[in-house]
Length: 257
Image (cartoon, rainbow, N blue to C red; front, side, top):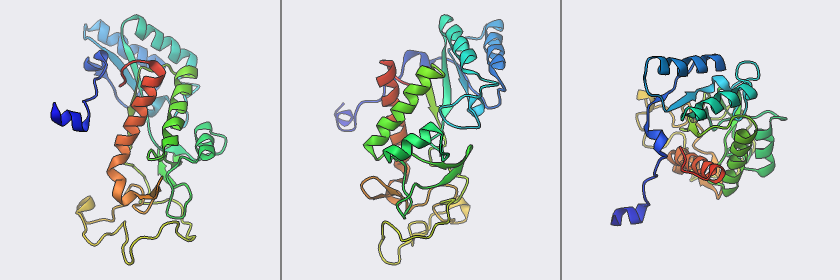
């Protein structure tokens, strides 16, 4: 108890999260979701919650739906039936936001200045499922507000989910470091001769002592307050989880998953 007074109490999950859940990649449409749930009932297997992977998204972009295979009106009807039957629904979201002008989550993030910066002070550009992406900097308190706004509009306007599955937040990146080759003057200088991506002591990354930015963000990225990614890399997933949990509890007024 004294230890928990120092570090904080464990998160108390909602009761329904402790039941049997069904989740996999590759469901092509809402009709398949109906069939999967119905087969649990047919075979008398208890099912508490149905999940969907990125298949439901429009071109793999966060906070969207595929209007052909997972149209919002059909998703709402499906979720309403789940709720009538005492079941819940969860979808995946990733931290990578498609850097596409006209895409609201990107435009909002640029306006609010909440994306992780590269060493030159520009939004760091990586690549995940939708293509070139930028990433919220959860060291920035404004990113928590930004993230909550995106989740709230998604729940209220498109898919009234009960919980969110957050993924790819190592941060996963299909480029090694930045996908942008800009070579302008760095915003932040590090100690002379020190390369955060290739520190003097090489860990056995990828089993061959690969640079630390292998398939992730550059270690010379800069978070709010001048915090170097090299010193904060393992905190990204935790902070995204905190932002997501806080958003869900603010929106739904109940314990979050």
